[in-house]
Length: 100
Image 1: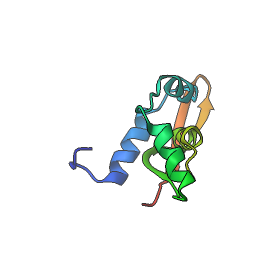
Image 2 (image 1 turned 135 degrees about the vertical axis):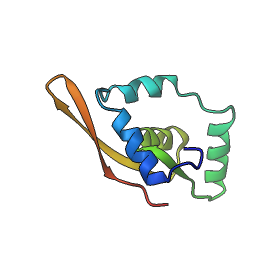
Image 3 (image 1 turned 180 degrees about the vertical axis):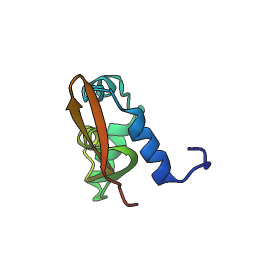
Image 4 (image 1 turned 90 degrees about the vertical axis):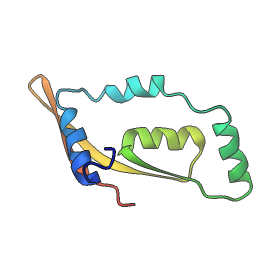
């Protein structure tokens, strides 16, 4: 984005780039996702002290929910997309934009 276009337009363009990409891309990303050293420990300690923790992402819900589960966060907010298969290609559609 680099401030050249607004967030909504940037998001629409990113969703358009997903055309033809199967939903299994989320599995590939989950396998490669590396958490910073100490992230799990920090989150668990903060939770034990009574803090509420949230992830606010400009990405998409499936990965935000994965991070929420892995780190024990209370909330995860991200953009909702849908992938529909047409013949052999997937077509993605933005269903709901996260409001921050």
